[in-house]
Length: 205
Length: 205
DNA sequence: CAATGTGAAGCCCTTCACAGCG
DNA sequence: CGCTGTGAAGGGCTTCACATTG
Image 1 (cartoon, rainbow over the protein chains, first blue to last red):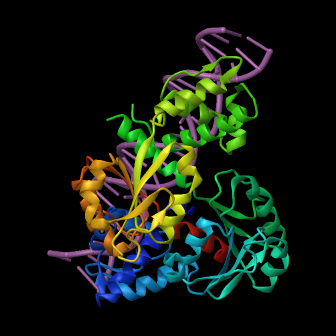
Image 2 (image 1 turned 45 degrees about the horizontal axis):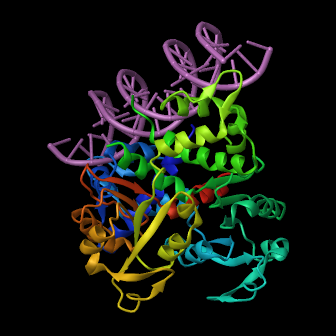
Image 3 (image 1 turned 135 degrees about the horizontal axis):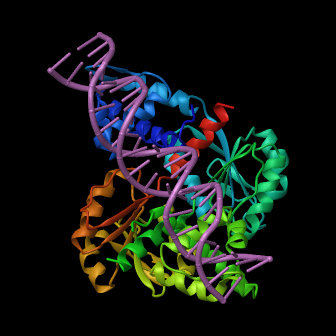
């Protein structure tokens, strides 16, 4: 069965919410309770979970810890992932310190930039690496996922470099369409399109 | 007719691409050419535009400048928008300097924070404002859109404050469900859900 | 009896295919 | 003749509704 991308995305929201419940010492949760906390319908919660198996107990609901473990495994978050950020600008810096990544077990083991003024500067436990060292660094540090946070005009060539170094998954923040082989998974985040929905709404009400 | 949110989001991508074409001195473009640059189908381009009117010339295509002007007007980007960023952390800082907002005519006229160490510090032409001054600042600076970039546990109360100060549109980066009146347009950006699609993909191939 | 799991229906966006028009 | 604009068909996600189960 084809699993909707959007269901996978929601799983991570469920996981986050289950962590909150765990911290509150809550042991059992129904699809309705979970749905309410998240702002979706209970049908959707159950349908999303049903793509992956049966996790609940009829009449009772879901065991918070068990469900959290299951979702974590489904998403592949039951082990750490080494990731790199490419682009040591403001966006790269914000993503580097973003706690959401750390909480899910991502380890940012490299930050690349081509600006001599930035190369070698210390960011927490690591130093900014020269973009020319991408191939060797990707292999040495076993980096599997790369976040692209460079200007639009540099994104395609940087993306090509990562892919030839063996990277199979890219999260792209550059506002440009990247061409990648079908064997590589690409997700785009376009910060400026989001706000345009708001101006459109405000202009037409 | 109900216009899909996603079509509106794509319009801003079309607009950005049209600007590039303008800069290259290209005067006419077909839906196919535009689609190819963006990575969508030509049907989609035409369908998206058809929700708003007829902009093309059969047998020829679209006049780049005219289409750009039309889209700009549809999206409400034919005038500047005063926006505020709430949260002077790393994410707030990255969004403050993000060129994508500036290019579309957004003016960031305030940055709020409740940390005494940050209040009063200078960011470009403005100073970080005490969150307690939200009501007066929103009105004085005619702020219409707010970007929330505060920790999850602070987001709801900050959102409430903005709404009672008259803000009608919110872009929320906090990983939490905000409750807002139906008269307020809310868009959520969840940075950490995006990357989870990648780990799921890598774990299951 | 409460809540899950899931076929089936519904709905919305995408894709198709072609009439229409310069 | 090329390309737009658009009804209609298609496909995928959401919602419904209920059989099922502890």
